[in-house]
Image (cartoon, rainbow over all chains, first blue to last red; front, side, top):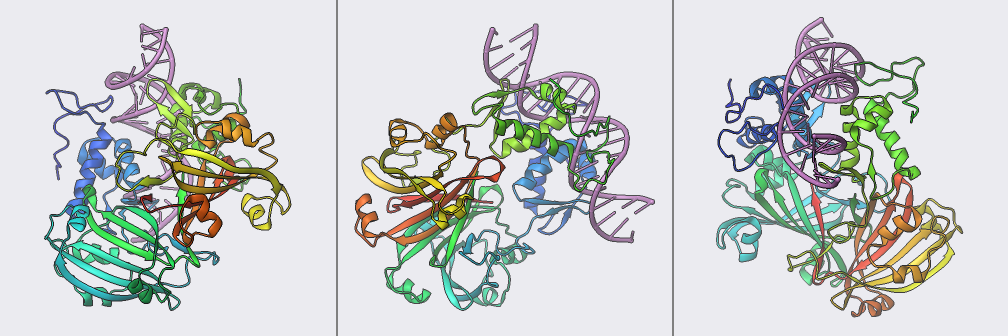
Length: 264
Length: 264
DNA sequence: CAGTGGTCTAGACCACACT
DNA sequence: GTGTGGTCTAGACCACTGC
């Protein structure tokens, strides 16, 4: 019931800034501390993807702050896409399942067809095996060289035409039981599988894009001629706490599609 | 002084939702209406890029709402990068000048050099001329075929090495006095020039990325061999009101650089 | 109907910047 | 000190959802 309501600071009113007994090394607004506590509950699995979290009023009571403060904390978590508010229903933990529109992190769209996509992507897994991380892979995943990783290679096709070749590396420790069969049998986004089977939720990602020439093996898998230009997309995806949990190298055919990005 | 404080709705308390005399076709929260009024002042040039806008308290008085409501309006405008808050100093109109870190909309970064960039880009303008919009350019700029447009072609280089070839189209009507000399003499971001000389502020942009092969003329301008892969970046930039004001087609060399994108 | 998020207000005090 | 944005509270009422 009681939830260690913040170290000690109980301010009946007034701004954040823990009312300072010791010389605190860092001050942070109350709502930031609340945000941290909510985050902790998300990480610990107290509330799982898709779940409703307690109402703002309940959380306010639990953390011993006003509803407005909880609200501001939830606001930020919602703009970070960690929570989703639904008026009249509650606040939910965001999930890659039920992501009504396609894949959340896939920015490849058809050039003309203003519609979302020409049907869902067809997946074909080329290989899936456990191996040891190279220095480069280890560095990007925050592992050590030689640590076990799971490597997956697959092709995505739209309307029968191959469009994407992806190589994926996952930390072996976190994805213990993942096999080719699990992946092949699954429908729906891979990140949804990670949530339901391994309790790992991808929260944000950073991508680096380049233009490259198709190598012979790549070209044959994508059904194109060698040397044709492909969009190379290298992604590192992070869970809570900015922990890297996936490295993904994609090669996209962009003759009839494009990678869309919004700047502001 | 008085600023037509919203159609009529004067609610001494209680939520937005204009207190409904007529069957209003659309309800919107008070803070959204305030946001619209602030936006109007930004568009009209009442507050120019770099200016301080009135304090939250002053605006609250002017619009006859509470400070908290103005605050929420400003909050959204700040997250949209239209305004910038500076504690103790005031709220400022965002500007592409004084954008402390490089160009705001340029996502091309060096692969290794963890530093921002290897010095500022060197600009070389290849051509700058007025012409009539093709159907395609007109469509993307919201003009009619044959309307006057200004076309600029330039090369950006880093440390002496050409890296970007850009073709830019601007609506002729809005950029009346713009000449090659103006562009060539100017230092600093082009969008800063647009603000100071034409009162046009680019607010957001949408980019479409593809991988393409370098055509012979492109290759020679970029100092590479024909056929090498280049990252094609087609950008439409918008002012206030989602009015398109620039079409830009860039070709980026990505052997040692990459286009960085953050997903969430 | 009750419960949830959404909006609005009013007032208090803090942190920061400038004078 | 004065003025600015930043945080926090308490209470009111609205809008949506589902029983």
